[in-house]
Amino acid sequence: MTKIDCLVCHDRTGTYMKVPTEAGMPDPAVDLVRVAKSVGRTSRRTCGECHFNGGGGEAVKHADMSRQLLDPERSCDVHMGGYDFQCSECHRTRNHKIAGRSTSVPVSEGGFSCENCHGERPHYGDGLLVHHLNKHAETIACNTCHSPVYAKCKPTVVSWDWSKAGDKNRKPIKDKYGMQDYDWKKGEFTWLESGKPVYTWYNGSMKRMLLGDRVDLDVSPIHITEPVGSIKDPGSKIAPFKFMEGVNAFDLEHRYFLVPHLFPKGKEDATAFWKHADWQKSFTAGMQAAHLPYSGKYEWYRTRMYWGIEHEVMPANMALSCVQCHESLKGERTCNRCHQDNKTVDFKKIAQKGTDFSYMASKGRDVSHLIGTTDYIDFKALGYKGDPILHGGRFKKLPMGYTPQ
Ligand code: HEC
Ligand code: HEC
Ligand code: HEC
Ligand code: HEC
Ligand code: HEC
Ligand code: HEC
Ligand code: HEC
Image (cartoon, rainbow, N blue to C red; front, side):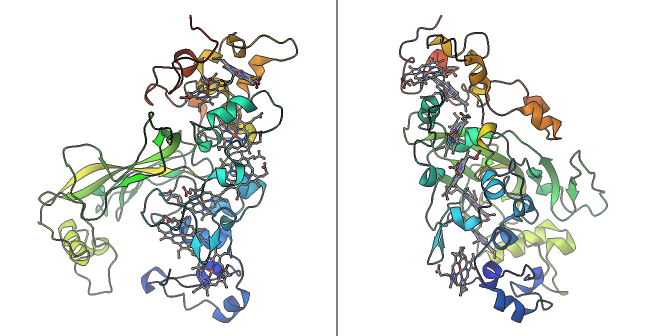
């Protein structure tokens, strides 16, 4: 970290800002003396100044970060809302190495996880679910249960089609969330609020396409990032992601991703897309700047990125219930499929305890299609034969002491 200025993270007046065209220099209107006198610890605001806007707008790339985290409701983010955590309370920083891996870029200053604070057995007390929940935590990432929907505080972009950019006459249309579907500079967007994540096995590593990597153009979509993991690997867990679907340009001869030159460098700029809306010129200039040859032939291809869901953890009572995953626990027989009935315990009620999508829908969230659903994480897609209560877990043929009908 040598090319970054100090005040962007350490200002506490909230007035420090940059101008996009000044290559990182502060806005001349900022009172630098006042800012310099204010320096102190970082905050959600200083870190969010950059991270709430990844992708050139709020919540565009990160499904789980937006300005809502400046002062979130408890139900939006239990740590930053309920307990007023600052970013660096989780992203512990020593000698300016900010812990926390990204799922998109391969720089790393050390990772950390929920378990660093909560331990491998985070559920405690004498509740009847504690045993099974801690057992599940060996196979299922915390946020699979604790963040059952992403972008619940603010809609996020789930598809971005660059090929449509350039039509200065096309009028943007507002979707049901009030978000615009088009921007002539950037193309066509789809937004989603309270999206259901995609679940996949993840061992903490990502495969990433880097600039200049040749790809197989016949595979659709082309994965820009993809989690590594497998049901057979004890180090992998089922983790939640947002898909960012895209349409991007590739060099037909060199078979790699093309970097466009977008932002005009002054009045004389003859190639910037945001001035001339000409892809050919923009790729020629962009690839020159990236020091990679461009054949002059480009084509648009479907792409996909996986974005991890790390923030906006919901309060404990809004985690997925047993029934929301296990169809087998939905009927009259629940825990007593395997355990003896106990007159003082209402098994049915315990198995249903968790996220209430009808309550969220009543608060205006876009989740009515999720009310009453089970098999939330799609066991078959993950490589199970079906509900593990009936068919067994990944390393167990069948749960002990239970014979399926
Ligand atoms: C990307 C954000 C970021 C930038 C940029 C940044 N810092 Fe920090 N700095 C932090 C964080 C995070 C901490 C840990 C404590 C906190 O949260 O404030 C910290 C801590 C510090 C501390 C306390 C001692 C320590 O090491 O824990 C000093 C002094 C400091 N920074 C000075 C600077 C200076 C001088 C610069 C510019 C060269 C700078 N910082 C740039 C994020 C940043
Ligand atoms: C001046 C803009 C800026 C500020 C302010 C800033 N960051 Fe970043 N940060 C970036 C960029 C750019 C990246 C790399 C791309 C990305 O992940 O979006 C990054 C990456 C990260 C990563 C992933 C690192 C990795 O190794 O993969 C974390 C975690 C992070 N920042 C946390 C913070 C925290 C916490 C703060 C506040 C103390 C902060 N950032 C302040 C711009 C900033
Ligand atoms: C409750 C803990 C917690 C808080 C608070 C928190 N984060 Fe994170 N964040 C995480 C975890 C866990 C990860 C994943 C880290 C890893 O795998 O090493 C993460 C990852 C990230 C990443 C990389 C995400 C990606 O996939 O590209 C960024 C950037 C980031 N956090 C920024 C922030 C910012 C900015 C704030 C404050 C507004 C913040 N975080 C507050 C827990 C937290
Ligand atoms: C820096 C430490 C830290 C990290 C990292 C962290 N937490 Fe927490 N978390 C806490 C503390 C402190 C509390 C409040 C006291 C408690 O309930 O243990 C809390 C509370 C919770 C609660 C209960 C909230 C309630 O009151 O209903 C859940 C659920 C939770 N965390 C899940 C997570 C998940 C999931 C992650 C990873 C994305 C995570 N935590 C990362 C420290 C952390
Ligand atoms: C199979 C789903 C599931 C997984 C996986 C899971 N949790 Fe939970 N968690 C729950 C449920 C449900 C509750 C509420 C329990 C209750 O109300 O009795 C809960 C409660 C909690 C609480 C509040 C304290 C308590 O014991 O009630 C914390 C803190 C917590 N979880 C953290 C985590 C962390 C950290 C992880 C990952 C290491 C994790 N959970 C993994 C479902 C899960
Ligand atoms: C996020 C979805 C999810 C939730 C919520 C969930 N389970 Fe599971 N459950 C699974 C998966 C996946 C497995 C298979 C684990 C493995 O491969 O070992 C499993 C396996 C089981 C098994 C059989 C294997 C074993 O560990 O003995 C039982 C019993 C079980 N779950 C009960 C419960 C109960 C009780 C709850 C509520 C506290 C619950 N499950 C909540 C996904 C879930
Ligand atoms: C598919 C069979 C199955 C179902 C369904 C099931 N359990 Fe279990 N449960 C087990 C088994 C087997 C154990 C023993 C430890 C192990 O292998 O996980 C166990 C252990 C427990 C324990 C710990 C007992 C001890 O002595 O430590 C509790 C409490 C518990 N289950 C409660 C529940 C509740 C509540 C439900 C319903 C929400 C439930 N179980 C559903 C199979 C099941």
